[in-house]
Length: 91
Image 1 (cartoon, one colour):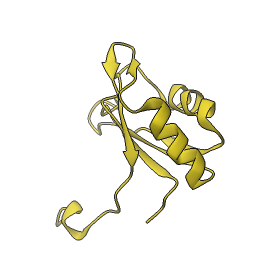
Image 2 (image 1 turned 30 degrees about the vertical axis):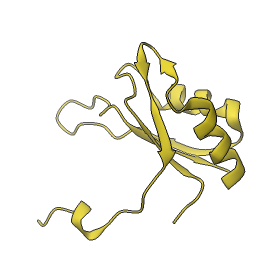
Image 3 (image 1 turned 90 degrees about the horizontal axis):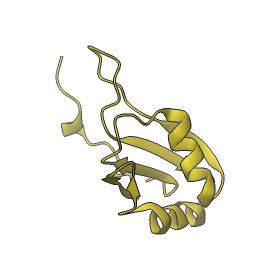
């Protein structure tokens, strides 16, 4: 399991990848930030992933941002769980 990868939920739909990355820079070095988009209209799905440089920075980010209000929404930040076989839908 990647101890540096965070799941960020309940994000405002107005937030973009650059906003997400800038927010987490306050906790340390951001390796990557991503916001999955709906396939039909390219709008954010309301959650994202942020990879921090170290597990310590990831822990600091969880402490700083979990439950924090961002644009009138309380975001949820936690370590991302690994994908399981049930995550993938059969073709």
